[in-house]
Image (cartoon, rainbow, N blue to C red):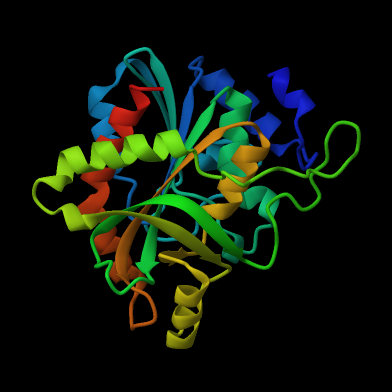
Length: 286
């Protein structure tokens, strides 16, 4: 990817090695990358059912330099296939900052997708609702984010000339893609429960502990709609690599109240089909 060589990178060569290993197993060139968050891996089945031609299903463990997932609900597999004439790379599970990885690996999905040729990223996540008007089960299309993780995804990145990666993220989430996602979600769900489709702002905390009630009040005052422990590193890296970004957050619970990871997974699995249909419709429009 000659264009990527003019863009910033962390300079560790990891995404290049992973992409090379993927190409040895599949010739498919995706136009879009998708990351499925906690409990949402089953959304790939909706896309798989519409796929045509050759497909590949690769465990992260088989890709040199790609960390294995350690979080329940993250399958740790990369699916490659075509929907119509559009190649898709779906990462079933992500690598988290709170697992002890640096930001360069917390954004590895976007980096690999860009290296493979993808021009856009669809980032999905299970989140807690900060807005009391947003109930569990609501799909939130992201318009912006708050990075409260204590580190930027582009720390240490450089342009080929050695200069720091000063990247404009004033529109981290592509407005046109967000509008398309809202329209698609409303077409699928709006007739039965229009209140379960919203748009908003994602607050990213480092995790892995869930938020306290005081932290939830703080986030609400800062303008957050939902809160999670991912997505932002991938979104910022994708923008640095010239990609369009769509963020889809599924509110699994109210933030600041007692919750378990098992509760989050159960709620997410119920939404996987809807997320899959929205992704499928968007892919066909890229």
